[in-house]
Image (cartoon, rainbow, N blue to C red; front, side):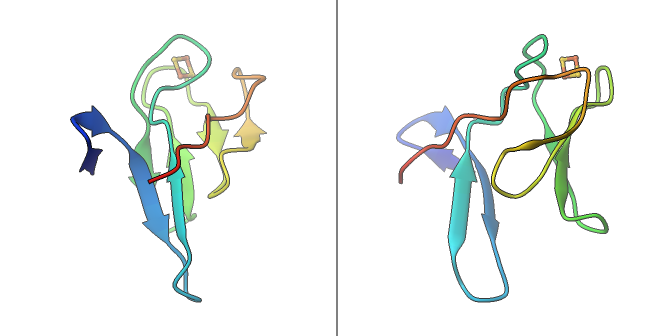
Length: 70
Ligand code: FES
């Protein structure tokens, strides 16, 4: 989604909580996309994966996605 002109990776969980993150992969800057089956943010460039809170699941990224308040 976009918020104030910027791309935001947004996921609303089953409890209704909205999780909003920077969509920019911390490895080399590609834009992550939502993986609905695994409930993760996956980077198409080198395979990094992040959980709904932006924490790294799989490298090569070593740093999580930045949280964004909306
Ligand atoms: S830019 Fe995302 S894994 Fe490399």
